[in-house]
Structures are given as structure tokens and as C-alpha cells.
Length: 430
Ligand code: NAD
Image (cartoon, rainbow, N blue to C red; front, side, top):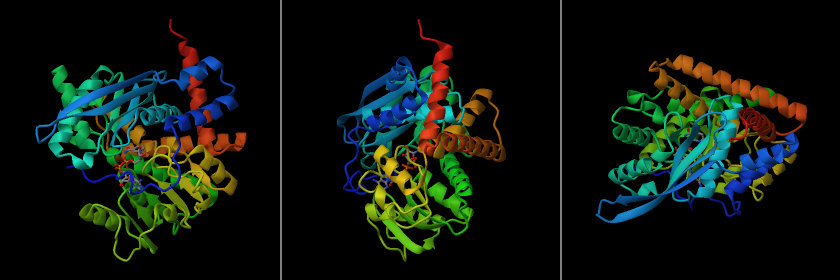
């Protein structure tokens, strides 16, 4: 059984989520397109995903029953290179959400200068209720159904919520069996034993740590003793907490889909991880008290790291945020309405497409290593990734100062202008 990762009801607050996550992504794009004066044709191209594939995934369950799951793969734009983006397993996965996530991948690759377009995939399923064998059969059939789109030169999936190296290994094996030869470059985030990269598991959380470091330097904030709150204690949230603790930050609260723990005196992120592994949740950590999702978001702290789902900081709770900086480990955790409220309050928001780009950067390194059949050491990987995130931060910060816009809009200006250029130089086929 896959470890419990989410209960869609437990962590949500009572506020209204946006009607469409893709609508939220479009709103961010349109604001940047307006400011850049992008012409109408390019606007239409970038507002419309290039390919949207919906598949039926019939799976024989352990009791003999056949169930059919819905799966998706969306390629938003491939002007700058092959598609790149994770695969999410979650009961709430919809085509609308996958389209938004694919669009954000386009921007993320553009601002970090990585030669990929944006893509994303997902299957609407509840992995908690499935055995390992059922998950494997579903994954292999999903990989087969989307094999008409993916490939090392075409579109390269990676892990996202509730998917991990083991699932990437099944996808890689399935595509390799079809081809009759091993295709390591088909996915990233694989185990190191089959062509994965050192540093990939920690890469997104490490990138979040670097983004916090860069933000703190601009805010004149000392990381030693800085208090942090983390929502979502999975791959991204737990790694960010652990690496930031090494920089001197103090974790005062963390939450996952099943519970939360708050202790002003500081929680050891490694101990919390061990507690989570043994009990299935970060809730109930000895000596701590639980807080509601709304309370978690409004705890006085220096650094707030949403690292779970979209639309967690919204119009109805943004005013309560008392952090100095919000660093988005998750994709799309802040709605445009909340962005405006946070900006008015003077809270710095380091946007997802920058803050969590460490994962795609090391995925890119993995793909390069697979293609070259030549593997790098961990020092080289972490150093190269650090430089890309720090340089991208500096570039975006400079744009935000020059244009007098927040960091999200600055990042979007950079991303959209790079896409505009790529689309123009390639020209419109035919
Ligand atoms: P994960 O499955 O490892 O962890 C997700 C965590 O969020 C779990 O602790 C889960 O319990 C918690 N969670 C889920 N719903 C919640 C809720 N309603 N309230 C509180 N906690 C909740 O996933 P991950 O890979 O860490 O991804 C987390 C986020 O980071 C996602 O938005 C994902 O798209 C984004 N992201 C991940 C990567 C990556 O490399 N894994 C890269 C970039 C962005």
C-alpha cells in the first residue's frame, strides 16, 4: 500500500476554493501578457494547451473486479523543448487541474532556462485504498495509454503528489518492455540503481531552502532562529524543513492531510519525520498541540511554506497570514486574490515557479546524465542547482524592483517574454 498522503477533506479550510485552477493560472498569465503588451495571437497560443489527452485506465483489482480510472496527460507548450512535468495520483485530479499544472511547468522551465516545455499528468484515484499490486497494474496501464505522447525526446514525466521513484521505475520498465530495450530517459525521479540522479529526491525541498535563503538575504532576515511553519510534510515540505533547520531555522508547526503539530519551542524536523513514518501523520507529536488549517496559516512566524495543494492561501484567509515571507513549495497554493492581499500587507511571496523549481532542475540533470550515460557526483549536482535557483532569484528580484511588481508577476514577465521570443523565432507552422 502506498503511504497515506492525503485526505481531501481533512486539511481543507472552509473557504471557497477557486472554481477553476486553470482559470487561476490563466489570470496570472493574462496579467503578465497585459504588462508585456503581448500580441493577441501569441496570447491565444499560450492560453490554450497544445495537447490534452484523457484516458480510461481499466484495472483488475485484487478481488477480481474491473475498475476504470480516469487519467490525463497535458502538454501546455513545447516551443522551448520536450514536455516536462510530474504525474499526480489523487482523488481530486481533474483535467482542469492538470492543465494549470502543465502551464506552470512551461513558466518554471522558462525562468530557470531549462530547455523544456510544460506538461503534467495525473490519475484520479485514491492510492490509500489500493494495494501495491493494484497500483502497479494501474501505473503500467496508464503508462501504456499515455505512451502515444511521452518519450525522452517528446515528454518526460516525473513524480508529483503521491507518486515516487517506485512508480517512475514501473513506468520506465513498461515503456522499455514495449520498445524491447531500456529507455532510462523516459522519466526522471527514478531510483539511482536504474539511471536516477543523485540528489533528485531532495531536489525540490533543497530548492525551497535556497529560495528561502535568497529571500532572507533581501529582507535582511537572519535564518538563525527564524521560525517556520510548513503545510504538507511529504517529499517537498519535510525536506525543506530538514535543510532549513540545518541553516538554523526553527520549525514551530507542521501539518499534513491527517493532522498537525504546533510547539513554539521548536520541533526537530527529523524526529517529526520519524514520528510521521511510524504513525502515518505529523499530528500528535509529543509535547505539541494541534492547530486547525486556518490557525496554521495565521501563526506568527518568519517563513510560511505551503507544500501541499493548490489554493490554500485564499481571499478568506490571506489577511490572517503573519509570516514575513511565503515560499511556495506547492504548485499554485496562493490564489490571485490572496496575492493582492499579501502584497498590501507587505508579505513577500516567492512564487512556486521559482521556489519549487529545484525538482525540475535536477530532473533535467537526470535526463542529461541518462542521455550521456555519464553520471555526476552529488557535489556537482547540488552546486549547479544552487547556482541556477540563486541566479533565477536574482534576475526575478531585479525585474520586480525595476517594474515595481511582486515576485510572481516579475517571474511571469520573465517566463512569458521567453516564451514569446521562442514562439516568434520558430514562426507559425505551416
Ligand atoms: P507528497 O505526496 O510527498 O506530500 C504531500 C503532503 O501534503 C503530504 O504530507 C500530505 O499529507 C499533505 N497534504 C495533502 N493534502 C493536504 C491538506 N489538505 N492539508 C495539509 N496537508 C495536506 O507530495 P510532494 O511531492 O511533496 O508535493 C507537494 C507539492 O509540491 C505539490 O503541490 C506538488 O505539485 C509540488 N511539487 C512537488 C515536486 C516534487 O519534486 N515532488 C516538485 C515541484 C512541486
